Amino acid sequence: MPDQSNRVRRWWILIPAMTLPLVMSLFYFVAFPGTALGNGLYALMKVMLVVWPFAATTLILREPFSLCLWPRKSDRARALWLGIASGGTIVALMLLLMQTPLGTTVEAGAPRIRERVAGMGVLNHFLLFALFLSIIHSLIEEVYWRWFVFGNLRHLITPSWAHVLAAGAFAAHHLVVLSQFFSFGLAVFLAFCVAVGGWLWSQLWERQGTLLGAWLSHLLVDLGIMALGAHLMGIL
Image (cartoon, rainbow, N blue to C red; front, top):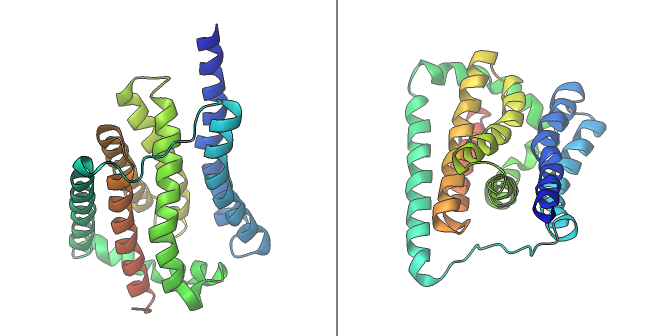
């Protein structure tokens, strides 16, 4: 019975964790974009990403909130190199895709990207915003989606399905955001790429026992995306 009770608690903390980012994105990016309400909901969602893993783990599951961000020296080099290699490879593939007809389609969305960034009030300091998203926000997402969501899912379902379900939930709100800039077909393709990235990062977390490699890989990918966005908007 204690085991069953623990499983129920895990599902209760996971269901809002996996669905609220999607639901909230529909409000702050579709229903009320560029408004005080929309921007407020966006900020509230970011607060949840930080607070919910800690609160749910310590207060509901009553388990230690123990992150392994800096592993022992013997494991550190491998995590660092795999993070750099995977992140660098993804950025290189992204740049190659921009040289294809897909790149022209992405470039066509530049005016909408600039409009939404301006509506969020960060256009005039986009580079600082981009650094925050790439360094701090990528760490927050790794803790939330890999350590917390995937980490709890693997206690409930098989590891293979945990990877898939966590990656799908991670990509869902990205699909909403991307659909506001690009055609639905392109948004689905790009969201699938996000899901593959999420699957890769949960694999790194599971195999390395640390978020370091996944975080570094995520950080590099976000830097590449932000640099591309800045270029499309004429900032770089």
